[in-house]
Image (cartoon, rainbow, N blue to C red):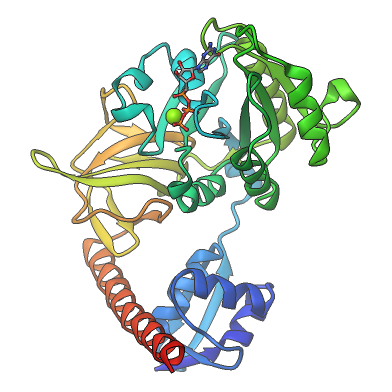
Length: 369
Ligand code: GTP
Ligand code: MG
């Protein structure tokens, strides 16, 4: 059954129809303004915009309702911070120093392959959830998604280098997503470091740091010696304070998939970031076209945990597949509900991939003629 047009759905959600269409495109669905949408498509689209949808089968009507949380249910939550920047400018080293571990040394070729997620308590006793994002150009798409579940971006620029293409790209991602930026001018321990060159390079792309009379907080640091890192974190916390971040820690959890893969011994392993609510062992989780009961959860140090609240990254066992990075997840009431929605979504994905393939084929025929 087809319910309403893309245009009507857009006005029910108070967004422009163009936003609905471009969101559909990013999900691989080709939708036109007056195209009537079926239940599956509506469920997927409203979900993307943070609305819950109810189908009243008798009248084939639907109610779209924003999942607004009453103020009294909200509690402060830690900021989710993404570290971005050009290849080799020191993103992983900075996170290593903050976490006091040695992730870089164990990485194949020293290039970050996954978005790692970590929980950190600063010296001042505040919590920050960190996402480390890959620097290689091939991971641009993943990074774009990374910016979406981010409250604040740290842009790392190496002082012995310059403002590079991926520095600009990272700044651009953050600005488009409306995410506040704190600049970390790294590698100041190096004899060839020239922080002024970085400040100047930034000013050329309209990112004027506070020292130069601009609005962007910045901090000179060395990820090697640790110099300036406590100050950097305090600046991040200042930015977080302005944002006044809150979430309801007592509802069913929702959040985003950071990464997921198949582990020979343990089955599907997913790293996810809880954004609202409390995730618990035994919960039924729906993530994109996958679902499952949470068998076990681990924190970022590998320790078993029974629950995880807002702004907490956890590794989860129990899903029936590996959802894509950036996919949203939510806890469902019943196993049946989760199974059915997962099945609908995988069917939708299959149909989309067929449509996409047809599109490409036609295009290729066109080019050959
Ligand atoms: P990708 O993940 O590949 O994009 O790189 P990255 O930005 O995570 O850089 P990474 O932390 O792997 O650092 C790259 C190189 O710079 C390594 O050899 C680090 O040891 C070195 N490095 C990072 N920070 C500093 C610093 O503050 N001072 C000095 N001297 N070297 C640093
Ligand atoms: Mg790295």
